[in-house]
Length: 144
Image (cartoon, rainbow, N blue to C red; front, side, top):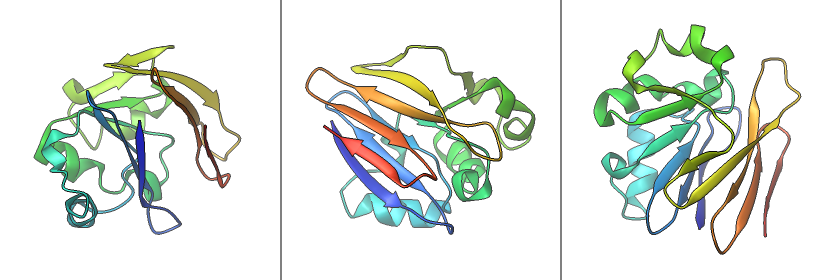
């Protein structure tokens, strides 16, 4: 598993997780042009991204969601409590609710409830060789 933080901070957050079988984004708080620029630096076309996991619905985590889905038609995974806000931005056929565990190709994804002013989640992401704990807005990312 490889991890690349594409943006982090109050102006936008997005992280790429990739294995030989899958590429996912966690959050898309940046515009599509910025995302493409960052992905281009590592030779990845945004159209090959398989899914996006949303941690919570603050704009610095979902600002670019509408444009990304419109241009790529990828699957978006959310908590059911995020539906009211997210379904206004993207078609229902792109929306998937988290199930635990969530298995995407060779990734096994479990959830951690985060303490925030809106309901949200962090993730424990595992493949056969490694694991990653990803918790946003707490400043804690730990890969082992």
